[in-house]
Image (cartoon, rainbow, N blue to C red; front, top):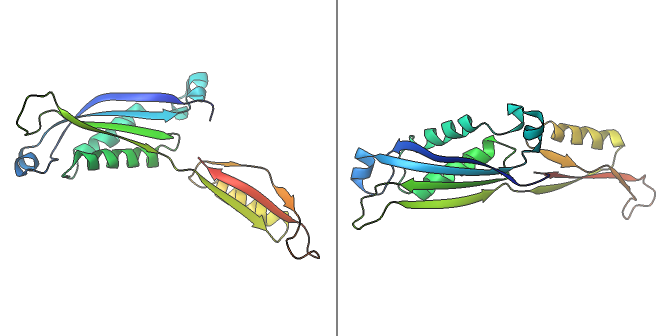
Length: 179
């Protein structure tokens, strides 16, 4: 990843039935959602191709489906569901920040709104592959992983001496990490 660029989708207005009080679940209310996705936008900027970025319309549609979907007690839960869904669906996104604002909660007092903001990051996993067989097996395993839906980066194959068994041939090892 070259840099940390950001995509902002701000003030998405949706009508939902979230809240602890019965009237919130019955009458519903308007919610505003802001999403910030951190990703590398270099290729999108260089090529001017939609396929190289995250489609804002899809971000809105996913967010709307969640906010206007099944009722939840807490807006924290709504925000968590949005962040999880966006990170799962857009492999390019490394970080997702979601702010859910309740514009008119039934709380006594004078204020503009209440909101929660969460930040979730994509996990990085490191996988070490080793083969007691010929390089074809290590290569085949790596190519199968490479074709899965998780975005991967691989380091080259490394030969290693056999551990505690000097008569065996060299072993092939590769480290892979998901991003």
